Amino acid sequence: KQEVTQIPAALSVPEGENLVLNCSFTDSAIYNLQWFRQDPGKGLTSLLLIQSSQREQTSGRLNASLDKSSGRSTLYIAASQPGDSATYLCAVIGRESNYQLIWGAGTKLIIKP
Amino acid sequence: DGGITQSPKYLFRKEGQNVTLSCEQNLNHDAMYWYRQDPGQGLRLIYYSQIVNDFQKGDIAEGYSVSREKKESFPLTVTSAQKNPTAFYLCASSIEGWGDRQFFGPGTRLTVL
Image (tube, rainbow over all chains, first blue to last red; front, side, top):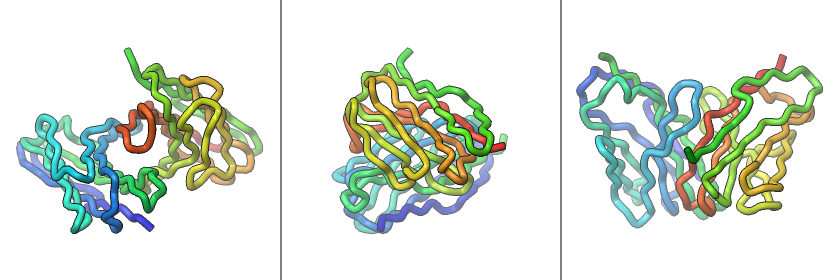
């Protein structure tokens, strides 16, 4: 059964630092991997979607990488800002999960001014 | 503005009551989804619909029911059979199906009194 893990559960860094969030999954036969952002008490915002054939995707200060063979993805945030404070979730979709999204529990990120 | 709306934002339910959560989208998306989010856990799929008048159970469908009479609308009813309904409920949609980026509504927080 596909499992998605995000470690650490929480992370606090000073403003301006570059940082990396981690996502690991147990079954490498995925169709795509997605990163989302969730602000407290709000819905989710899609950040990046990486197809299984891709190695990375970039959007502004965000860069997501995918290494299927090792079952890992990272979300790199450059020059962090207080507005980046949120919970970041990753989710994978694959044949093993009957093509439904399987979610990690998220990493709560706090950027200190 | 195109998007997904959910109402109400907060909902309180007494024991034994059925309540219905609204989800509407004007993105012309075929697929719609209902998720439940509990603290410290990943999102869990309740129901999904890939086309009007058709829907499928997700991992935790027991105690819930849905309908998809219109492309724009996918209401979720939390029945009295759902023993632990207190949670944050998120509705999402995508253009066609699972491989597409999902767009989320703002969520409904349901509390059982």
